[in-house]
Length: 254
Image (cartoon, rainbow, N blue to C red):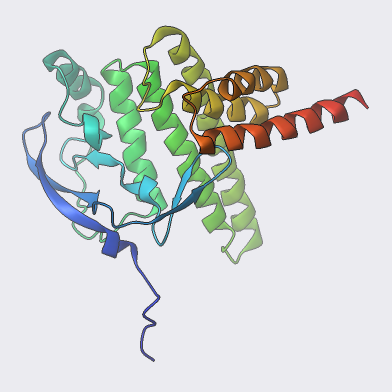
């Protein structure tokens, strides 16, 4: 039976780019999204982006398979000598070289592995809270998708265990992102991790709502709705979240 013309694979939207690691000076290839190929189809309530036929979040990290140094593509080459030494001492010494030549695309496990390395490197180079929090947010989103995949496991006990583990990991990283972004808001200049103020305020507001901190969420939503620089999409999301907050506050009073 011939493959339908409407069937797509992630390989269609990515390509291999040759790189030289700034930490170990060895060559490697990393997978990059093809410019403007993936079509955005929307976002989740916390602004997690959605694209047709591919989860682009899996491809945001550039990771050296030789020494383990990993970072967002935009930040990979921007690193000071002192930071390189810290990464060598705290990350590279524990890393075993990996053969990734057979990776035609990234699974969620592989993407999570590279994001975890990027987070370790961010800690080692003493990155700002905003950068680390964004990596935690990405990790949370990736674990949520892995949790969805676990629903297909046929053995109930294994399925439940995997789903519980993924949810626990997702919530742990989500909380770290929530707390870290709040510190970044107090100590860093915008944009923070590429996010402008109303967008980040909305994301933190949604996280606060998720963790049941309704007063914190309501205060941030008020700021978003009165900010002229907020995009229409962010304001629309803020109005939806405001309605949910009001609903939950009324339920609490019953």
